[in-house]
Length: 288
Picture 1 (tube, helix red, strand yellow):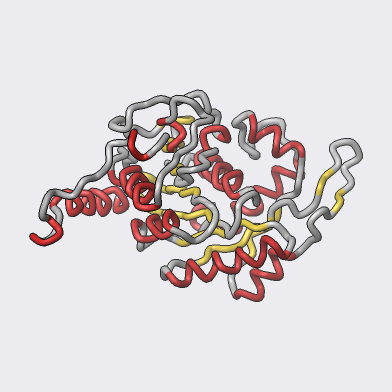
Picture 2 (cartoon, rainbow, N blue to C red):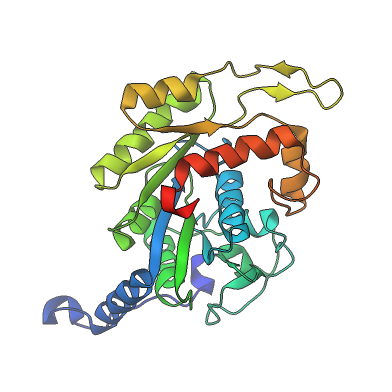
């Protein structure tokens, strides 16, 4: 989907010299109203792609909803939206851009994603930064999220336009979670993500080390493909909490591709316990 196919925000003629734009101010008011109705706002980010950030975001939202907490999940990755796949909503698409209605996964969980507006899932979103930031603001301001206990925001990799737009939209957010893999190539850029949170004055809620060891589906032996402990060491060095680690498991791939949660029925006890430990470390004591 290219920029010229999308209804874009157009400043009124002369507004740049006549003072504040009333349309922008109205959106700002909506942003404040929407965010005021959300008790907890958590951003999930990483320094690079391919570390399992969206998997963590989707399953954190699942975990909260399964605790009977009213939860929203915002897919802010405009170029690579994968949250619908991971929540069983991949076949929803081709909605009009005027229909900003979150899609329910279950009673306590609803989702918004750019994927819902693509007629063909293979269509690239060829947009510049300002337009991507604008659509994210609309996803927050114009979606009827309602009163939520938690909103989980899955951010694209890096520390560019989209993460900055979200951070500015949620200045009172609880903070961000950093997802990394154990090897230095991931850790180096994830340290930048920790410093990004510091720069935008949001707390770092903790680091999750993903793909920390391959679990053989036949014998159960664990092989440390990407080494081990790098995420925990980084968290200690940066002075932020370490929330836990997840294995590199074929079971995660199967569950994710079929839109099923890691805490669902039939999930292996080891995987279930690993993710439950992360949720327990993240949530405040009164939410347990």
